[in-house]
Image (tube, rainbow, N blue to C red):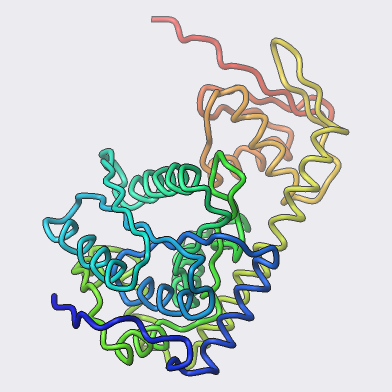
Length: 326
């Protein structure tokens, strides 16, 4: 992995159409503006984000690299980003985290956002931007379609969200950009991006989906990403409707939660899932909730995650399952 040592292109030397395009995308997501933090790993996507953001908002950005410690090269990669930032007088921090065992990718995502939240709060940043792009969004949509996910799973990432636990917005201004475009930007700047070997490891679902997308030239990746955005809008509507259904048709007591469904199926599923999770004291998988809801709709009883559910004259009752005798 080499680094040219050259400074990032000045805004006047950067292709103006790219600057204008990124400026418009960022302004649409973040009209209030302010001090922007960038999550930069050293890969082509995040380096392109760094190049574009520095061209659009010089003097208003800071950079963080999260070192998960999952590969021997990760410390060197963080140092490479730190060097680029030092050469361009950009403040940079390496955030070292420990990833718990289990689903490594999910666990890494959780600790990464926690680290970025702490960093953004400490540095007084007004927003944090990540380099998710259209290909990421399309891959996620297709993977979750393949798992029969509901609307919440199919929605993908929002162009603007929040870091869990704090009010600082997370911006994803590259969701309308293709991976190939970002690679070209980095190469044109004379930078050599990090080559993470996991991005070519067929053991990961995302890598296999990425390869399948390359072979399906009839699929429009930007259209898939746009569909994920539409599903994200639909998810907000379902959440709103589920909250109203809960307020109007659910009664919570010490020994049970009673629900008399009066909404479309997608909303009923959310309300029932929330009731089950409350009684069980934890999250329940969507597919399991769907099967139990089908049983209740047919007037049958069932159990899930330590919750006993029954149907009585159109009213669904959720109670903690009594302990089994030994």
